Amino acid sequence: MAFCSPTITNVTRRFSDEATTWLPDGTADHGGKVDFLWNGDAVLGVSVFLESGEFGKWCWRDVHIFKVGEWAKDLLEIAAHIKKDEGSAIRRRSEHDAIERAKSIRLR
Image (cartoon, rainbow, N blue to C red):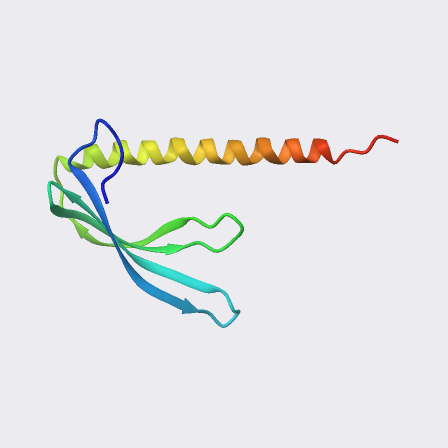
């Protein structure tokens, strides 16, 4: 799957699902591996898991591939896009929550 950015054209990512593990408390641990490919060559690979909670997000656990090179600049740009989008999503949820709380105010 290619990352959607008009300025980043040579970085793609590959996800390998490593199934779901059920923990003793009944929660599920979803995990896998994400490899970042630069011009078709795997340059960074991380093990990931889905964080539990109402707004679960994917987090990395450890690195299994790391090749130093020019690709790092593109990956840093991708990280900046993700960070920006996360901030926007949190802001939207916060604004939605504030609107819903205001709607539920009852004046007596």
